[in-house]
Length: 58
Image (cartoon, rainbow, N blue to C red; front, side):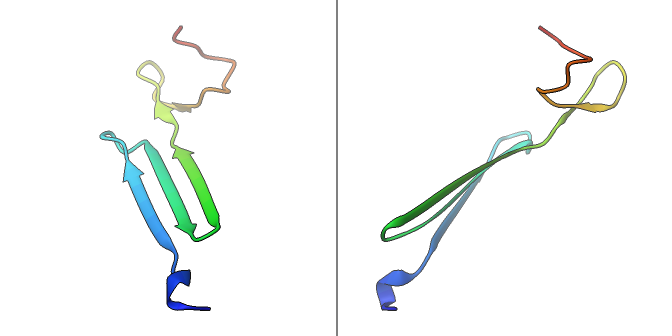
């Protein structure tokens, strides 16, 4: 392993802190990770994600 084999890590976060993007890269390797926290419901107070079929705001 040479000096150029160091990993570069970048982390970005949305203003409300719910969404995070993590990027890990070096020469020949790139990994991207997206993390999304559930949002609290304004009506019942529970956390719902996009796959929750019992509740929809559309």
